[in-house]
Length: 192
Image (cartoon, rainbow, N blue to C red; front, side):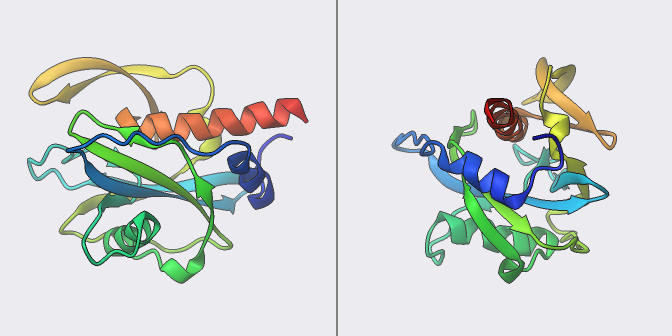
């Protein structure tokens, strides 16, 4: 099966194996949402660029998401709450399909990525206190051989695997999560 991937195809790919977890003490729990939808014959997702506020992830491209808070029922609730706070993605519009492997970041976060489906294209509205820009990207762009770019991290320049989409560099944990999803879908399509 080639692009666009259907909701059913993605859900089946996520069921193939349980997501990996890394129970590391002292790491902050966080969750992100891979919000997928169909547009113009391709499967796309929402990304955002964080406001450059001097924080460790400031100015970086990311999936909607953030730290777990005491009032969150679970990490899925964290991902949905953060997506609403950051880009006004209504939680009731998201059909949850599954989870990807947890990612551990150098900033000591354990990030659980949730994959959700939107039946129609939303009109995102970035929260200016947290987000500089919201844009969509094709999921298929994250497959194949990665780009290599120099980025600044903690004041140092570093060459990283990434993907350049819509003029933005997607790298780090966000790139790794999306690459893993795109590759899993491509592998499942080859096996069919």
